[in-house]
Length: 274
Ligand code: KIV
Image 1 (tube, protein in one colour):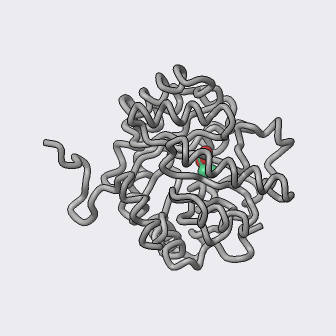
Image 2 (spheres, rainbow, N blue to C red):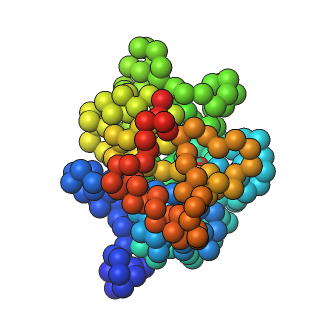
């Protein structure tokens, strides 16, 4: 009765403890975003370990200029759709702007993402007051992925989508924040757009796995926005991404190539890092 109900014949379901085991073994976590059942199934069958329903859907699906307009209802809708497409991959759902402004609000909204959406983990941006929220979620047995570095929900405060942690002080703050989110109870940490050397230092210093996006090859795993790595996001592709569909015949082949490149550390290359 309590066996993982969703697991394919070929691949057992990925669990939160398994993400820790992947770090302990020195292997790589392969993560991609997805926003619907069909793309989620492509990720799952290509061997992606974790599928993130990112609030990036506000930009790549809804066409907004930022992630700020995304609502909890939007996230529940897309998470439930993705849940219908995954068999084995761990399902992570982003908590949108203002949905975790205090512990009670976060517990209510994270509860919806797990119970209605079918997520196994929620992701939330920042440290500071967010540490209390992470603690509350962890105490209520809701696995948390923290997100530091470039936190897109803070775009106005940051003054744009810029690399973070470049000065000595900023780097020291990021290291302190990374330790603090792990101490607060996070099980995973996304590091977005930080210098590769800093991401490596954080990865070595904290006990939980790190997943980088624009954070160099030494994180415990990598994540990309699916539409970026398929080359279909309008406009200029971010420096840290790569078009894996170019020269390949199918979306499945592109995702398999990405998974292989992450696992053999050929992606990201130096040209994708800061
Ligand atoms: O919203 C998102 O897709 C994300 C990833 C870029 C990590 O947060």
